Image (cartoon, rainbow, N blue to C red; front, top):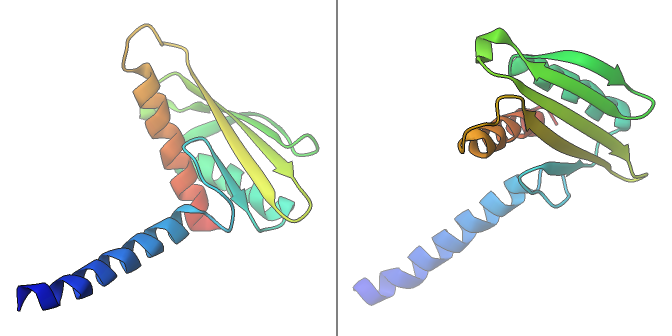
Length: 130
């Protein structure tokens, strides 16, 4: 009886992994910890980047839509000195978003983990919008 249930469990596990992989691709392109590729228009993605930064309590320092560049800093509510530089690159059939982070108070060993968490939060918010 137990042996008969294993193929079903394996099939369910494979289906779950397939769903998780599809969600991680964020709109049809490969996903990693610092970038995403979307099959949306450049304007849609650029606007979603601005809105997503606001959603996670970052304020805009500088935006240049023509160059596809946004610089943002964490608000006092976030309690940090994290700066994010977001590049939005129109590739014709897709739009690539790459995020770079810098922690002004990067004297401790936890800064890279903290920056990775902030970037992940931004990209999750962006994925939800697009």
